Amino acid sequence: MDLQIFFEEQDKLLEKVQLKTKRYLFDKVNWDLKSIGILGQRGCGKTTLMLQYIKQNYEESDKALYISLDNFLFQEINLYEFAKRFSQFGGKILFIDEVHKYPNWDIHLKNIYDSLDLQVVFSGSSLLSIQKQNADLSRRSIIYHLENLSFREYLEFTGIAKFKAYKLEEILTNHKAIAKEITKDFKVLKYFNEYLKFGAYPFILEDKDSYYQKITQIINIILESDLPYINKIEFAQILKLKKLLFLLSQSVPFIPNITKLSELTNISRPKVYEYLNYLEDAKIISSIKSKEKGYKILSKPEKLYMQNSNISYTLTKSPNIGNIRETFFANMIKNYYNSFNKIYDNSIFLSKQGDFLVDEKYIVEVGGKNKSFEQVKDMSNSFVVADDIEIGFGAKIPLWLFGFLY
Image 1 (spheres, one colour):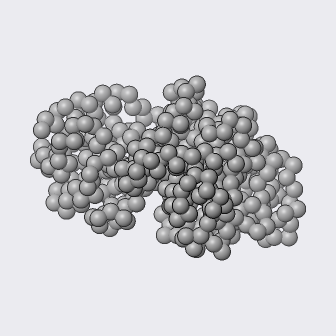
Image 2 (cartoon, rainbow, N blue to C red):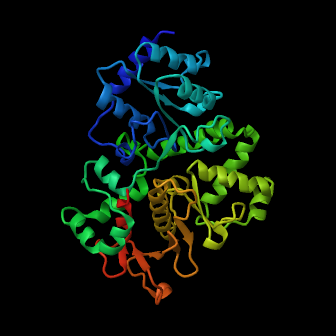
Image 3 (cartoon, rainbow, N blue to C red):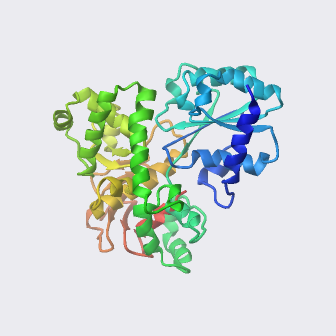
């Protein structure tokens, strides 16, 4: 087992990595922990995040090593034995990418944790549920979730402008001053419109012309490779899953009729529920329930959206603008609260008055610049979140500003 091969491959990767811009999660991870997991959708920058840490802290050292388990060499290499050898040669921190591609990866990580003086950072698909693994990784590893780019990150990554993130309460109470500060030097609405179409993934920096093609490829890899491998789904069912996703994409926000979906896709009703959960875990769709139904795990979601607006534009070339606005708002709120690692997700529900109930406190109506307060009038903690305005007033807040939550 020649470690030099892997160090040479790492050197090639590090040559392409820049440190100028980093994802929001970089500074949130406690890199001193013995076992760290980073989960997220393909294309969100998990690999780059790990390589940036190596380049910043270990570029001239052989104490850190990056490996990817989709490398064909690991079809023959025992992961635990590899980690043991790396540790014996003075290795201190091992970065393991695509962990879900290795059989019984959880057992190997457990044994590394228990037996070796070695720190491990591993990444994998957002489909992974650490609690479901045979090894008890949930008490050994701290798990972080890397979400798609926020609007704030898009502005920074594309070199347009750099700003700090704001807490939700700051935006709700001080949005006018914040918006004035942000918009004094550039026209925010132009770039926000670009973001809704092209800004959710870091690979926008590579090539805009092939951007939607890359999102399509990511979805296909998730459905054809990651999902069958992690959840043991037969390939014949993947074709049905693709049909289910197509039906959802053509009419989002989709109010699901489970019986109708079952008939159209030839998928049993219980399997429709299961597959909708898989699509959501894979960060392709996003479901929202009412607060009353939110506590019932098997209850039908009342609305389904694409997970972010870029997926909407990929699968439907002319999506409804109202849907795009709601998709963006729900995406930013969910991603913001996901970093808190709550036991129960109460970040956003559907509201009887207004569109959404956020954190079980705030009622939000999402719309265009002329959206009135009619639907949320006389409601405490209610807000209109409006598109096509640079600066709000009172309880009317610009939609784009929620892209600064992380």
